[in-house]
Image (cartoon, rainbow, N blue to C red; front, side, top):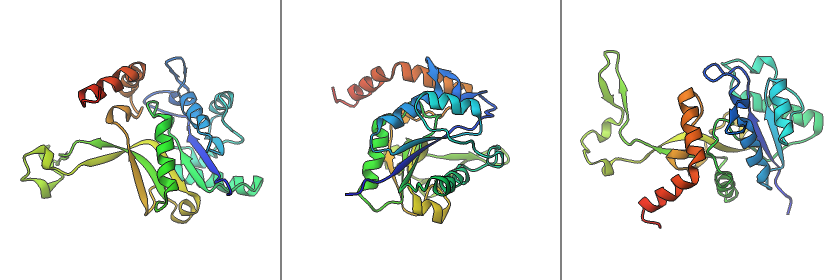
Length: 243
C-alpha cells in the first residue's frame, strides 16, 4: 500500500499588530510557533512540516525546532489582506515545480492555537481516512442563542426561527471554527481554491481549549489555561460524572 503524502503547513506571517511578533513571542518558555512545530513532528503520518512565512527571523526559529523553511512567502502574499489559501497554493506550485513534490493532503496548523493537542490532529486524520470528505477541520461549541446589534444598538436574535423556544436545551447546537486543525485533499484545494471545501466534516474540540491568540487578553488567558490544562481537564471530567 502506497503511503499517503501529507504536507503540514504552518502559516506564520510577520507584522502582527495587536501582539507584536506574536508567532515567535515567548509563550511559557518557548517561542509560540515551537509548540505547533513539535506537535506536527510528533505525528508520524505527516510527511513534511513546512513553515509559511515572510520573515527570515521566523524561518530561522522554525528551523531550529525542526520545520522546513526553504523560502519565504512573497511580499505580494504577506499583507493584511492576503489569503492563506493563496499562499498555500503558491507553495504547492513551487514544491511541484522545483522538487517534483505533490502531497496528497495539505494540513494547516495555526500557530495561534497553543491549546491544541496532538490527538486533535490524529482525530482529524482518522476522519479523513474514512472517506467522504475533502476537508476535515476542528470546531468548538458556541452559545445556542446568537444575537447581533442593529444600527440603533437594539439586540436582535439571529436564530429567528427558534425565537419561541425559551428552554435552552431545545435550541439547536451551534459550532464555530476554532482554527486548530484543517486537513484538505490537495486536488480539492487546487480545484475549489478554498479551505472549507464542499465536502467538509468536523471534529469537535472542547471550548476551553479553543482560545485563538488574537489579543493580549487571549494570550494571558491561554497561558493560564495551558499551565493548568491537566487539572482543568480532570475537573471537567469530574463535573461530567466521569471520575
